[in-house]
Image (cartoon, rainbow, N blue to C red; front, top):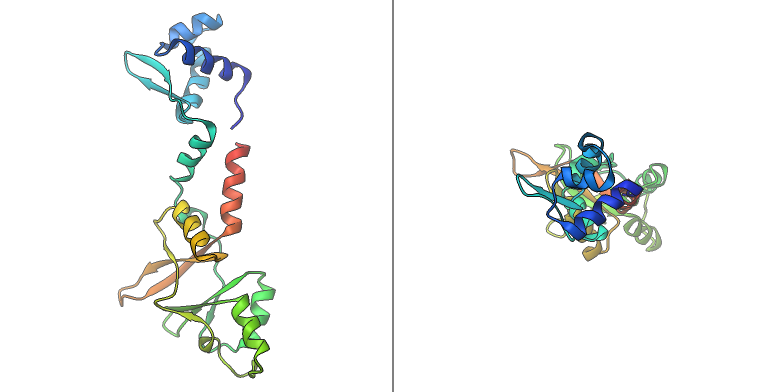
Length: 207
């Protein structure tokens, strides 16, 4: 978030004189309190300034990168979910290879006929299967997919920062976003990827 010249002046005044009331800030800038109200609202909502009733404004002391980190921690994965590419467990490896390239994704999420999340099949899995001499036209993806308990996923109400940390820790490109079904299994509702995280991160600096 880039501050305007006036917002930068306000921050400096509060840094040097805080806590200070809005009226006193306005006096120092030879402006009315009403004129400053939008700037003060932006600065307090962004966390750069904090305000206390009957006390005034004071500088939070948080650097910009800390403010961005705090903002990122509030984001929930369901709000940034992209469309998941889901395939049935009996799909052949050949068809899975075609699907992963046609959809331009790094991972396929595998389900059974009841819609239960069963496994994950990555580009590496498909490449490995195609190189070992097996008949990719008849072998189903459930033979080569990663299964429970080795699956990694996030629930809809978990935070984006948790998904990012999990992808870094497990060295994977994307995660399924799931909800728990009445039968105790999981249903795939969306996908969060490294690309998603990168777009969110860049947007924070461009605000």
